[in-house]
Structures are given as C-alpha cells and as structure tokens.
Length: 372
Ligand SMILES: Cc1ncc(COP(=O)(O)O)c(C=O)c1O
Image (cartoon, rainbow, N blue to C red; front, side, top):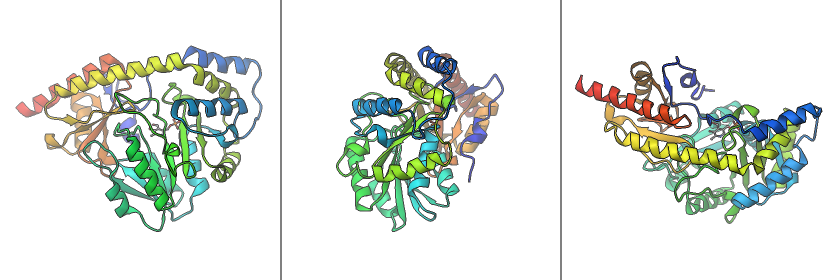
C-alpha cells in the first residue's frame, strides 16, 4: 500500500530543522480548547447522532455557504474523525473494486494508498509541471470506461497550486462528460495567497450533483490531533456515506463537536494564523531566491513550497537524505509520488527562525558542495 511520506516524517535529532511536517505549529486556540473542557466537565460523554451534532452541521452548512458559496443542508453533512476518514468514506461508499481513480499528480500519497486499500486503481495524471495546474489533455488521455472518480485538491499538497475558476469549470465539464464523481479535498481552502482563491466544483455548472465536498478542522484551526472532518454532497451519495460512518466510527467524539462549532466562529484566531503563514511564505520565498542551485514555484495556497533540485545533479531521494545528514534539514523527496522526481517539498508551517536557519543551512551546504 505504500507508506507515503512516513519514512521522511520520523522525528529527527533535535539539531535538525524540520521542513516536513504538514501541520500548523500553533496550539489550538484557547476558546476552542475551553469549549471541549466545559463539555467534558458537563458530562457530555454519551453516544450521539451518527452524522454528528445537528447544531454543528447547521453551523458548518452556513459557514460553507458564507465562505465558498457551497450550498448544502445540515442533514446532508457527516462530521467525521478527520478529513482522511471522510475521503476514505467517499471512496468506500461510492466506489467498487476495480474502479479507476484519477489523481492530479504529483498528489498527496494517501489518496493512492486508500484507493489501493479498497482494491481500486489509482491513475496518476501529470499536471502541467510549470506551476502544477491541471493538464486537460493528459486527463483526456488517461480516462477510461473504468474511471469513477476525479480527486481535486486545491489548494494542493504538495504543490501549493490553487486552480482557477476556469480550470475548475473545465474539470467539472470533464467529470460530467465522463460521468465521474468528484472528491473535492478542500482542506486548505481558507489558505490562499495573493489573488488566488478556492473555487468549489459544486458551485460551477454541472458540479452540484457530482461533487463530494470534503474538509476538516486540522489545518485552518490548528486542530490536527482532534481528528475532526466533514463530508457533504448530493443526498444519493450521502446515504452511502452515512452507512460508512454508522458502521465504523459511529460518530466523531461527542464532546469535541461543540468545540468544532466554536472554531467556526473563532475567525480572529484563524485569520491571525493565516497572516502568519502568509508572512512566512514571503520570507521563505526571499530566502530561497538566495540559493542559486535550486529553483522554486511560488505557492498560491496551503503552506508548502516545491523546490526543483534537478540542477544539483542529485535525485530527490539523494538530495533529501544528504540534506538531512549533511545540512541537518529534513525535507520530503517528491519522487515518493509519481511525477514528483527532481523536486522536494518544503513545509513552512514552522517558525520564522527555523525558516531562516533552514534556508541558510541549505545555501551553505550547496555552496560547499560546489566549491568542493
Ligand atoms: C491534502 C490533504 N488532505 C487531507 C489531509 C488530512 O487531514 P485530517 O488531519 O483532517 O485527516 C491532509 C493532511 O496532511 C492533506 O494534506
């Protein structure tokens, strides 16, 4: 099934700068934590509605509409133990063994892993490597009678690309033509930079009936350890999704759901963290500019930067391994993902001092190699 990034996510010795971890380095806000504590103290510890606390579902339906014009209904939402579980339900509930799943590659490795786990077939379709936006020609070449899903992840992990409205329209038109379900992993939707904005495929013509919107609290509210996510889509699909949840997790933890509701209204803290990521992004881009041996693409969203290391003469595994042992910087080698060779992923969800020190180590290491 593959282990994704896990070998490169192992906690390194203390003197190593970690550019690998895909989670905000902030502790969840005080208000959110306090809600969970209060709920526990009040004894909110029993089984509850399988699809999730109805008042949370209502608040989420409003939030999705207000932020992204996604139209859904509280009865058509399932609150899941994390976005990952919601994605798994999407594949499990709507797919069958042998179905093909179109992934825009390089793609987050967990998709292929989940798909294989369910005896379905991941089909990696390369994006346009100059900026990582969809290549419709490549998709047309890859689609077959067996294709059942198109996974969209914008803002994207690992590439940082955010697809334009026109691109999302083209992807939806393609899904309509080939009768595909769209799994829209929009977990980074609030984190877009510059003029880029997230467009939900459910909001463009033809999208509403075939899009499963899948997200969660992990990234935007720094709640990775809480395991809270969601999935919503057309009622015909949600019937299957509800069965997946009731037969597995039953529901997300009862006393955590009111805290998730607090998060939705805790705009100030969310925006503060976003401003911090935006600042870190501009600092890391300036730092990377001073390393002539590598190129990079300006990320449009999320907290990742792809660097092109092909000019160093190393492949991405060698680069990552030597960066770790010689420069004491941990990065993800993107050859772990199809179409990722020649690149490494940096996560800048780490503090400013680490960003500056990590880049300086990479610069000194690569300069030293050149003059050796
Ligand atoms: C693209 C993408 N989707 C989903 C997830 C998982 O989110 P969660 O922690 O809610 O399961 C991640 C986490 O790294 C991710 O990068």
